[in-house]
Image (cartoon, rainbow, N blue to C red; front, side):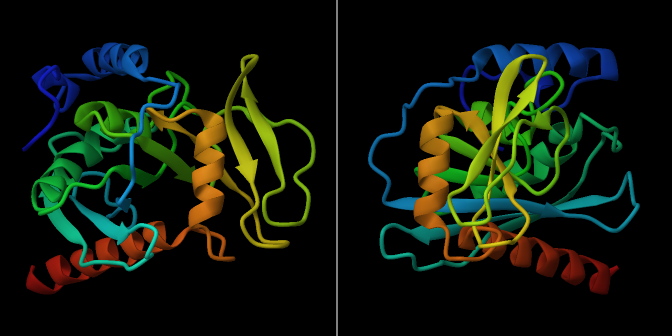
Length: 235
């Protein structure tokens, strides 16, 4: 599996929960909250799927590339791996990392910007999967989550696309509740790595197509579910 040269092995596979907690804090310190993106010709959605209520089974990862600004969705790279780490709330990044890295290795062309289904800084230790994977790959990443993990929305989100309100946790703005479709439930957009919160909002609005989730996230979601169904059919 390929990841940035500075990454210790336990950042992917810590030996226990105590080590995982330490690793999350170390990764959180490496997260860059200012913009370091560069030109974007290819972006990608990132998502995973697993069997309902299966806390130890395979994680099916998908990375779906989208040409920019043409918006053409390409074939997704997928990988299915049984993680050595069971599901524990707040530590999902460790379950998903092996399959996500394997899917990344299968991409012929590496995306310049990632939209990751999950949280980034909006995490108790500021290390959701979008930050975790962004640091592992040292790629600009934006977190797009459907539910809150920590913090609360301050104020009201207006009814129209682009309306937003800050998500605050322990006095820190960690994400934005952002509406992408009129009257649809907002999503929670945040920093993953190498992208400011303002730029994360801007890119999310640019990519959005009047649906609740941006198209690269939807494409990755569909591909991850297809990989799961194929795995289950072969079992």
